[in-house]
Image (cartoon, rainbow, N blue to C red):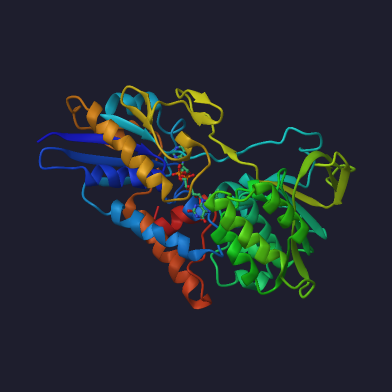
Length: 423
Ligand SMILES: Cc1cc2nc3c(=O)[nH]c(=O)nc-3n(C[C@H](O)[C@H](O)[C@H](O)COP(=O)(O)OP(=O)(O)OC[C@H]3O[C@@H](n4cnc5c(N)ncnc54)[C@H](O)[C@@H]3O)c2cc1C
């Protein structure tokens, strides 16, 4: 019976759903052995380091990932980085097929003056900071100011704004990294302005997330009724369902009672950022309004959440922040799935159908199986996290969280993670 060896690089949703598709497509005549390679000592990609800590239900998808990971023929190799510990060339030579599922984690830039001033950071740094990603734990976002501006009109911008505007005790029962909870507890920020270039009818927020905002117990959420009324008018008689749902959710927000709480999250539309200004650090953001006027918002922190690009990996072709591909095929025996393929769009579930389509192509392209190989002979890394090491880390984090009513307390440094794994 032919057994094919497939390497999947990246243990995020797209990588796991690619593995699941291969597992589901196995027959008596076609078997797969799957090696999943992940640069961090922990798997789950943005489910661990992206999804907002105050949305724990979304993270329950990790149970599906663990089922995939404990199925026959699956091996996890964590703490192994493609491009550093193993090369694409080696993978392509030794495996029957290689699937790139490395996501897109580099924040897009606005390209305006002042963007590099201290006090200006990308959501691509801020989000992994509060989520305990080892590479971002040492960051120190400036929370010693009254006002923060978040630039962007999608769910990432909304997550970032909410994290800044929540009453810090609301984060106690979450898996927010301890260093971030401490910093947010001492934060002076009381107003967060979310600024969108276009009108409410074009915003990429999704309505379930908008509908959650009025449930915030300690934060005023401000949207101007006039902005929503104008958007309804511009959207016309029969806007698309998503636009209609969004505008309805926004209308409800615009009717909320104001001024009840010490903390405020305020939406600003039709404002294009032109410049960040300040003396050695961000002190204000200059916007141009749709009427062509200048509008200045004084702030000490500005976070851009305007999308992500894939980090370039040697040997892969890129175009506009994505791996260049044709329906998921890159070159012979090389495929791409998830955000590295499509760019930063869609929810976790979008990666499932997408990966299944690409895995069907992969199977159709298979030739004679290559000889078996020992993974350890291919890499230079010496501390490799297996599934059982990861299970030890996971169990230790969950046990640490239990007495505090948290789903887990994340270990943050690579050293601590390896130690918990028993390495
Ligand atoms: C802030 C934020 C909040 C989100 N919230 C939600 C939400 O609430 N609900 C929802 O449905 N979706 C949400 N999403 C979207 C969801 O997270 C993505 O759809 C999904 O994670 C994309 O999966 P992926 O596997 O392509 O990428 P990722 O999840 O980024 O996984 C990529 C993996 O590849 C690894 N990797 C990268 N480079 C290498 C390398 N060289 N070698 C080895 N491994 C490597 C990374 O460490 C990572 O583990 C959110 C996204 C963000 C950014």
